[in-house]
Length: 226
Image 1 (cartoon, rainbow, N blue to C red):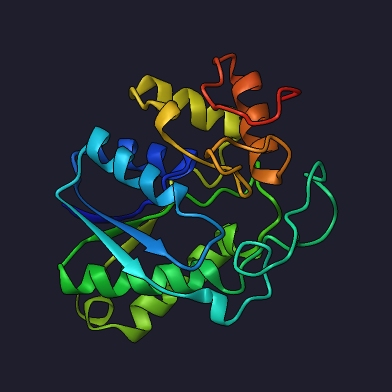
Image 2 (image 1 turned 120 degrees about the vertical axis):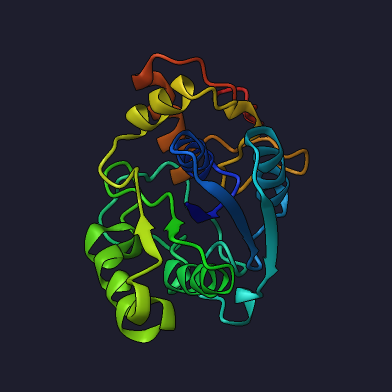
């Protein structure tokens, strides 16, 4: 069975790729350069693809800085030490997962892929609305109603294996599968050397996940207090 894997280079997407490989999928990885603050995660995605193994790795250029309105795609400071604060944070990128799934859908249709795998998580996350099961279910209906493959075959099917897992559970699962988390990158606001800030939402959730999983955190932090 052939599957498109949305691969960001982060902890979650690396785990998703490893799970897909465990399920003997022929994996076509897709990474998207969307105008994010840095290119470190794209280099991490390439490392993950090389380490875990994919049949093909496509890098799609897309400049969401044209729209802005997010701390990840415009000159807005990334909030620090506020993980879990109420509301949708400014690191939310407008319609990002809708856009990413649409691109993955086009790729999947072109390659006759049966599935699209994505690392969204609705437990340990920053409150983004496009990480919830309702969103995934709604996009599945878009596929079934608006694509040739959906109408004719009911595919591709969206697979979100992490959506109800805690970060600790995700890390333990990845460790079982041999994922090297040292080659992944999660930080929204790394320093010039690529070291994680340790204080953005993504860093805090990642650090907490390793602590709760009882697994040594291989992340290199720029702030010695981290």
